[in-house]
Image (tube, rainbow over all chains, first blue to last red; front, side, top):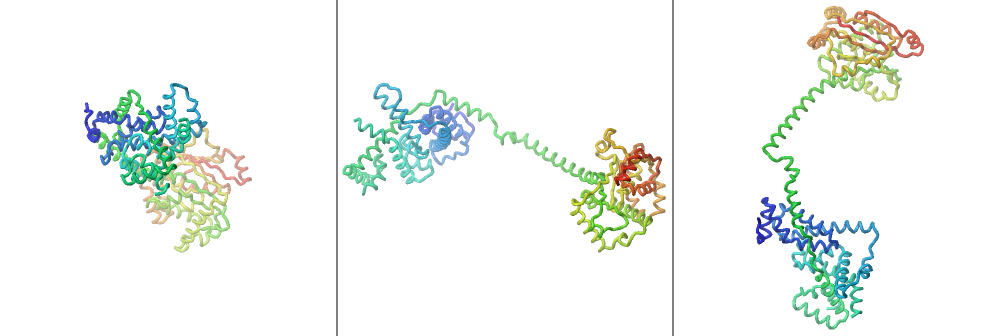
Length: 192
Length: 372
């Protein structure tokens, strides 16, 4: 049995030497962050389960090629973003073929409940839908910075772009998200 | 700093990732500029909303499910592993297989080469073509209206003939020229040509090949049940090779014996049927000695030597089929009589024979060859 306290690098080394059980430690350690990143990228729970599973399996298959130049978590994030982006693109093309969903209007008509909970839930759903509407790379940079709180330099390493580019992309992505949520904010302020 | 510059750095200002001096400058501007203040507030609210998204728990048993798949991956060997592991077992096996396949390929290649040669000679297809004007110019003998055009396969065979085959060919050609000289006075063109004339003949041959598809060729096909048949150029009926086969003291069964033999159902009705008996070798050699010069005899000796080494199968009866123009039937018969003893001659299709004479169709001749 592999101890839960060993570092990611040690786990990776053990796996590379054929100790598959060490991978369980890594899965337990990173399942929540990876699952949430994937879930926020896709906006669908079932898809998130499937894609997260693929992420870990891909990582296991490719772990022989991991040289330890970056953190294991950064490497895992990259795999997760690649898988989520691919799935998101295929989902989008599927949605284009089917009838479009009037997302914003549907949320407004959601089931009533306690006022505060409902408002909070509604806001979260709006944000999720707005994220879904963003370009995958914009959504990724917002989620990494604002949701996962990944440092700029790690985001830059993860996306393989310079830090300056990360900042400008983040600014552009936030502006786009703000535009998508503008109606809500305006309505909120007016109500207040 | 103006509003545009402020707004490009507003995102960093809101998340407090700017240095103190830059942050202070933007803060002063935001306090005085309502437009930039609203922008900063909305941006901060937006970021807050994203950060405030709740963390979702993965389903129960997610880790176990992943690990189950991981163990499946471990159990399933990769393509590389399947091909080469365990090395000490697979590598010798594969090396042995490679050696065996290589040896088999060499054996097959060696077997196929003589087989191809034999097949092309056994095919024995010659076309009796009506000469075109261009051909008439280059014909070796104007008296003979028949031009035997070797097929592409025959050409190929003639290129790769062994010394033995060449001797046979020389013999056959010599035989044909002698007979032609005896029958009709051949013009000078029909004589063995000097080197320049040979070149011209080769060119003519090549021209003939090119023009072949344009003229309507009548095939004079010989069907053989067995035996190796060498056809030579200048042999009027393609008989030389067939008659050569008659001389063989023994028959060597061909690889397609069954395929080539005609079944009773498919056998056509012959216009003329001969039953001939092969002459004994001694008698034939005596006759040859009388009629051919020493060179021909040497060639003959070379030609027959492999056949004498072949296993004796004297009990076999061979059937050969020929299609001959009606006006060359007598010549055919004469040549047949010269090479073998005609035991019987039957003309079952007399009516058809007359019809053939009227219509100019070839006669279908069946020759049953009995061993001496």
